[in-house]
Length: 628
Image (tube, rainbow, N blue to C red; front, side, top):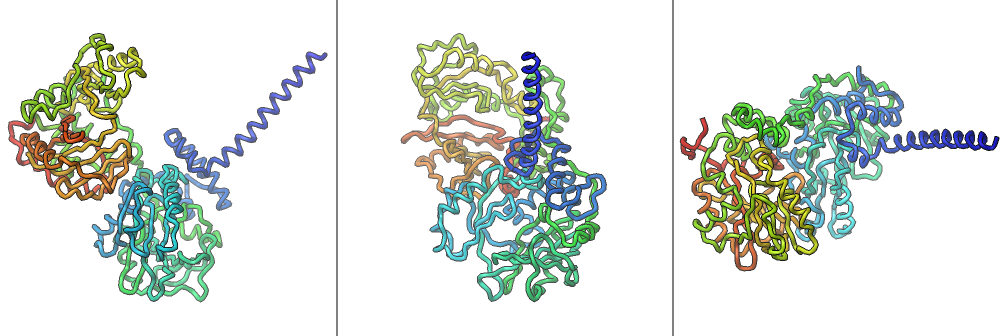
């Protein structure tokens, strides 16, 4: 009997435990649905059906009626539908509150853009002493990330930095709130704007929000942003007040006045909104100017109540939903694995390589490249990888062969001394190696194919040789990683060379075209920064690579003049080449040479890609060096 009791008791405990866990998991799930950290963590595992479930839960909780995906009718339902089903890449630029300035400048003129004082990628780099007495600091990838500073004397710098660090965290991207798609590929940037005040009032400014549908303004919302008690008033296109409230914001006492430049704002909003089924264009008005503040595609996040609710459905009639567009589908590039490319090398046609380049460019650069008439830096880089041939390329991209070439061309004092080059890891005599060295593949370009050894006694000889053994498979080279599109077909070997320093040297990458240096990138792995500078003035260029910081205080190398001279000599025969330098004490060394440097690497903003592309003249290439 006691055995039966024990079994029953055990069963009851097990069932109770399952029920408790089910209850807790269900509540935990409901809690996590609104957590951006959870959405960030689960990003690649959240299928669209799962995203819909997350939205359904939050939508019902906030608006107290169901989300309808098959036949959305209300304004909020249609905003939610657009988030998941309308992925127009132009929205990425316009959601980015920093990059949208370029879009506005191109469409209507830069005089309508709030001037930028300075910008950063790291809050710790902000020098408040260089900012004016009043300004606004913003982060570009979410709504509400604004710090208004009417008087710099009143601020706490550390509190501002702390807040900015939080806002720069990946989970703070508006996409991870409730899948506001337009922010998904935005690179975070902090920027300081000119402080703007309303006509005759230095403490107040109104937001004029023009809601446009298929390029036509049909509703305007006027809000006050700098009072503690925010107010909101809605009007139709003829400035007749609409009888509803939006969110929890009351209407302004005495009503809201029609802006002085109302008609001008409406005209501008319609020009900017023309490519989109719905967008809200926000304006500021001063005594004599109109500024575009931002463009918002997901007003209220699709979760702001209308009172009465019927107004939600009335406003919803204004949005004509477009055919679905799924840009994310193009981010999954169909490509051959390096081993497949190795075995199929002779069967991959030039047209197939071209298709690969177009698709990869679209998925990484976020625009489709014009390779028949290349203009941007990346377009020209891809064109050269596909069509430019020169027998020196494979020699100079081999890290060991390059050393011999450099000795003849510029002198052995600029060459990092090698310890040995091997085709078999068994030939490496461990005891003969110095305590500090660098070991790398002669044909690789990825960080996984290089190892900096600071202290040999802490390394495992067998593990290191095993890694090297993998490097020398013939397909483990840059050539096969990119479907054989380049001229860099190199047989991988193991190169061991002297360690110049502790492995944290600053790298100076000089980009040059036919003996003219056009750009320098300073790579500081310690700061995780890639900083673009003018090689002659050392001015920091206004661009950043996704995933990297910029360093506004990057130091000029002592031997800059010599670096420029060597870069000019080594680039004389080539339409584009990157020469990498290290400066150690009073000496400089050439690390490596690349002929398609940063292939498929995006510039932010994209306009810089086209600006730097002007310095590469493909017409100078001898026709004998072009593949037919």
